[in-house]
Length: 208
Image (cartoon, one colour):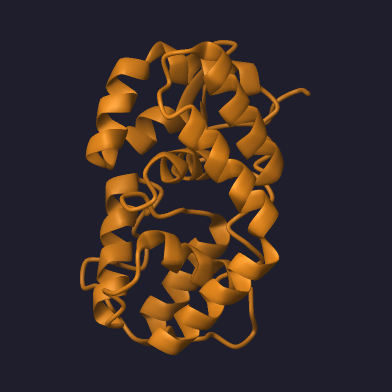
């Protein structure tokens, strides 16, 4: 987390987008081409390719990639309709995967997976973004409903916080994808989280 908390401005977001695009052209181009080639989730082979590639390039460190791919494929009809419509609730559906009888939460991964299918509707969550938004809210409240102990690892809540953040700072000309790039630089190291963190009471530690 940066020592100095940067408040967003139009110019700062533009600068962040330019820097991000310059430094991540190959990775972003590869993912863009892959998800454009296989937009649906009805073929398990295509789902597995997307899960494995995103997991590797965004370092989400999900070892049970096949389980995640099967979970997405098994719910493909509902997921594809929801993604096309931009329904926020589908993120939590994708995030919660039962593995060896235990429910795991891959929330950060799920936000990234949805974002790559529909970047205009799904801002990306990770722990750095969480910390940044909380510190910004503490310094200058931008959302009255965003309380100190609010759980923004519920996606409709997180998306509502992001909309309030964008509106408060007059960033309506930017997409969620643009704001992801800003938060990559000023909210933490990158939109690539070191690992998905468990929701309260959920153990996601897996044996490779």
